[in-house]
Length: 169
Image 1 (cartoon, one colour):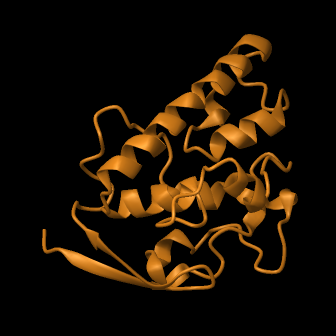
Image 2 (cartoon, one colour):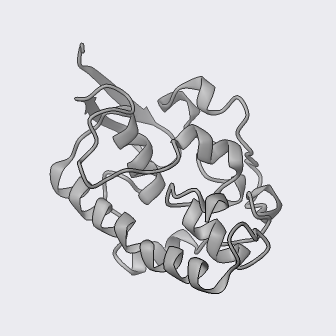
C-alpha cells in the first residue's frame, strides 16, 4: 500500500494532517471488531444527521451517497430508531472524551481508523471505550424480546452510534 497523507480543513480543524498507514477497513486491532462500517452507520442514520456535514472531502464520496444528513440542525427523525440518543459536544468535552486529534469524538476517530490512520495510544483508549458499550447491549438483551426494535429505542440508537448493529439484538 502506498502511504497517503490526508489534510483536513473543515469547521473544526484547519491544516490537520494524518497519515494512512493501513488499507481502508483492514488490519484492525485484534480486539476491535465493529459490526458496522462508517458508511453503513451514516446510511442507517446516526447523530441526528448533523455529524459529518462539513467534512465530506476527507472521506470517500460513497460514504455519503445514501447518508441521512441534515446540515441545518440535529434531527432525531433521521436516526435509525427515530430518537435522540446523543449528548452535546460540550458534555463530551467536559467528561474528557475528546482527543485533540479528533474534535468531533469517537465516530470521527472510528472513521479515520477505518480509513487507515493509526495513533496507538488513542486507538487503545477508544477501543476500550467501544468495548464498554457492551453493558448497554447486555441491558437490551436482558430486558427486550429478541428482535423487538421498539424496545429501548434510545439505548439501541446509542449502541448503533458505536458501530454495534443493535437491529440484530
